[in-house]
Image (cartoon, rainbow, N blue to C red; front, side):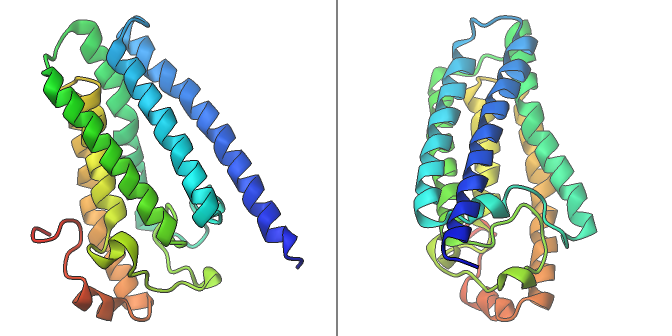
Length: 234
């Protein structure tokens, strides 16, 4: 295999990711503004703009430091544990439902989230997105499914956020879900956001069991890094 082949593969994966982003934006527009019944929804537009900017920045950063992550995260890879498909379905469903629930909430005037809390949602969104990108930047094994990646030389990652917590993807992902609901100014959208957390808490324990039994050095890593999601809490 020539040296140019991996780079070409990475470029193809990034191109597919950008196409997926374009499709995501179209779908996002539909599930946000159709339930809202109008395009005149400032919170919806500000969220869409923040999502686009954050994602493009994330693509640039990851392209420079860990381009193989695009192929790794392009699909749920073969060998993913069967039970994990349940966790994935619930978490993805929760994320998806945040948008139309917020749209319906705006349409029928169910929430009166104060502006300061909406802006706090934007701050949380920025921190959560940055944390997710940081975790993916240092962890080439950041796949969407739980499995032992023997085909990719799976090793313990203990740098970046993994030096402080064992599952930054889940903790930042949970913050992201809550922040999106607040950005959209919807109390009701916090319910599907909580559904995300309901899925990733047991998934954290499931993944830990898988890694403890199948990944060399992981048990020792859990002794060095005590906390799963938040130092001093869990």
